[in-house]
Amino acid sequence: MGFFLPLALYGPANAALAGMTPQKMRSTVSGFTMLCINVFAIAIGTVAVGAAADHLIANGTTAPLTRVLLATDVLAIASALFFALAARASCKQPAIDMRPLQTTR
Image (tube, rainbow, N blue to C red):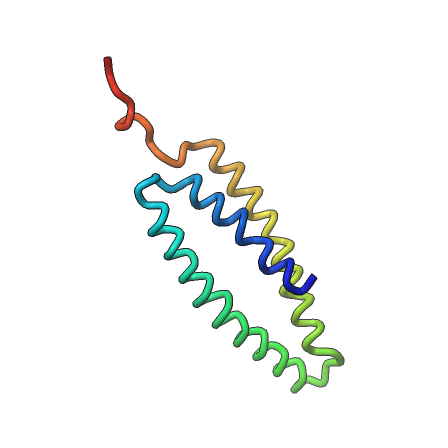
């Protein structure tokens, strides 16, 4: 369970980005996305979890790391709401303006 929740978001997020990105830009957008995930989620995220656990330890909370990790799991599960809202919004407007790509006869 500990590895599933954080990694479960990569597939839908990358699929959504690839679907909304023009074909010529997909590799660049995918690479930049992976860079952002590594910098923000992995590097800064672990520091934030450690700082939150240290803060809870200083306040005398029992099982501080468990509480922080449960909070991160709740955030990961709650992100499903954001994916649903993004899917709803993307259905209302096209991701790419197809008019310049259509040929006229």
